[in-house]
Amino acid sequence: MMSIYININKEKRIIYKKLKIIGIRNNGVIFGGMVRDEIIATHYKSLYYKYISSLPSNTNISTTFWNKEFHKESIKRLIIPNDMDIYFSHNDMAEAFINEINNFISPLCAGVIKIQELNLYELGENFIHKRIIITLIIGKTITHKGIIIKIKIDMIINKSIINSINYIEPPFNFPDFTCNLFVMSKIYGDHYDIRLSMNTGTKLDMMSTVSRSNYQTQIINDLIEGKTEFIRKSIRDNCEYINGCRILKLLERNMKITNLTFREIDKTDIDNICDICQMTVLNNEEPLIEVLTNKYASYIIHKCCFIRYLRNEINKKNRNTENNHIECRCMRRNLFNFKNSYKSSYLF
Image (cartoon, rainbow, N blue to C red; front, side, top):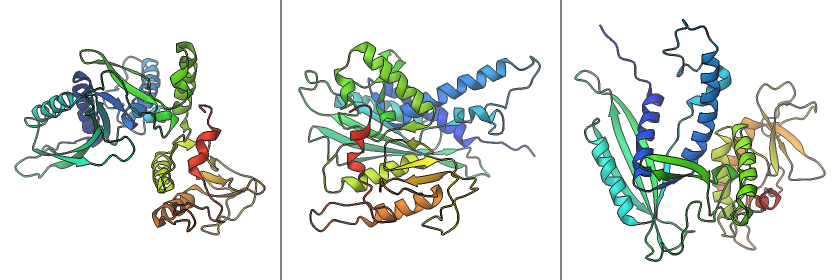
C-alpha cells in the first residue's frame, strides 16, 4: 500500500508565499508578523545553504531542509507566518486582491473563504478592517478526509478620497514593537522590497536616509538575535489589556522584549524561590524572568510560571477605581506600566 506524507508547514508556507505575491501584485503593503518572520527565516536560510555548500557533493540533501533535527543552528529557517496583514490605499485594489485569491483557491482544493468586517478603534473612520478566513482541505481522497489548513488575512483599506495627497502606510504612526516597523511593498510586477515604514510614529520618520539605514541595521540585528522593544503609545482606558496581549503573543514566540519592567535571563546564581510555583530557580534548564518593577529589589521566577501568571492577570482586566483604567500588576502587586515602556526605547 502506498502512503502519502503531507508536510503541513511546507504547505502553509507555499500558500502564504502565493498570497503574498497576489497582494504585492495588487499594490498591497504587507506588514506585521509576515514581514518580521521573512526577515528571520531569510537570514537562517542563508546559514543553512552555506552549511549545505560545505558538505561533500555526494551528500543526499533532498529532505534536509524541513528536517528539524538537521543543522539546528539554522532551525529558524522553518518559521512560517501565523497570518497575513495587508494594507490597501484604495478599495478597488482590495477587491482585485480578493478576486485573485478566489481564482487561486477554487481550483486548488476544496475550501471555503469567509470575509468579516471588523471595527478599527484607533485608525479612524477612513479605514476599514476586513478579515479573510480561508479553510483549505489538503490531501483529500476517496478514503481519506484530508487535512484542514486555516489561513487568516487581515486587510486594512483606506476609503479616504484624499489618500493620494496624504499618503500613509502601516503601522500608521501607531507602532507596537520595533520589529514590526518593516513593510513589504511593490517595486514592479511581483517583485517587492522590505524596508522601514515611512509612518513608524518614531523619530525614524524625520531622519535622513543614512541615519535611518543605521537604525534599520540595528533593528534587524536585534530581530535576528530574537530581541525587540515595545513602543506602543496609547492612553485609552483599556490600553494595558491590549498591551499585555501583544506582549504575551511575542513572548510565546520566544522573543526577548528588552525595555520592559521584566527581562528574560538564562540562569542565575541567586537562590530565589519562584513566587508562583514556590520551587527554586537555581540550576533551571528553562529560561527565567527577572522582574524589575521595584528598582530596589528585583526577583526571579521561571519564565513558564511568569507567562501563565501574566496571562491570568491580563485576562482579569482589573480596573483602577480612581481612573477606570485597566491595570496589570506583578506578583508583588507593583504596576508593570507597559504604556510608558516606549520612553526607554532608543527610538524615542
